[in-house]
Image (cartoon, rainbow, N blue to C red; front, side, top):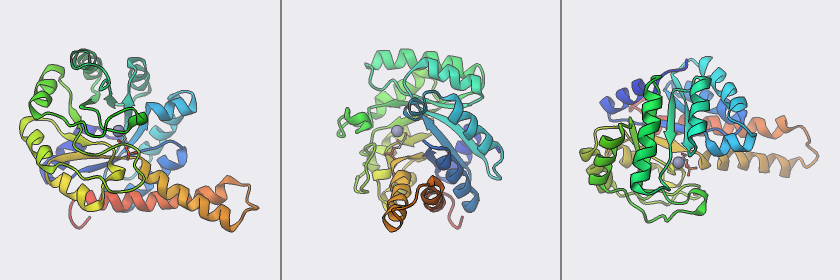
Length: 279
Ligand code: G3H
Ligand code: ZN
């Protein structure tokens, strides 16, 4: 079932657990993300980034597919627009029925980030849409951001108060698009931001964080864990394997089926890692 982000976040915060939020580029990702959540019996966030929409030429085709997959799921699924840098794309998502968005003006100056984010929050809240925003760039996005950037707790509190956002993505040591899992997070900083800010905290670039680092980050106050690259690593491993074993293959289903299965297994594994003990 398609569900709202507020309910998922509320449960996670009460349990001191986190929800996995996974990026889909292809329909196969979306299918695997929801199937993995059903295997784990846990809620999931199915994310579509502005980059993914650009790849398809528009948000609508992949979003309609994702919303239909979410609707048919046996577990709660929130379809979320991720890293939207353009207000027009947020409006498009709202028109499609998406009710969770991340508006990312983190490249702008602080006052500009506040002004644009507050405007998006007003538009989204008018239709009951949850808004996540980012303060302090999470390194590595498009290769243009410094991995050393960190979110300041006092500034985070001021930003949440000034914008009215429902969740905050913070820079605490992770970096986007890492295919190796060696990032070291500043758990002390996560805890200080959690104590200063009254909205759920979001970790981006989680593919580069090892399992024990993710568990510790959740323990220190992270509520939503965004994973993209890791899914592509396991999918592409399978595609490479099949094509190496059978160079004659031409039907994409032959290599995408094991790729999709691998994504499904990794989603289920990560959701169990982040979710309630014993899930
Ligand atoms: O918003 C998406 C996430 O931050 C994904 O980052 O591809 O490095 O896991 P990642
Ligand atoms: Zn991100």
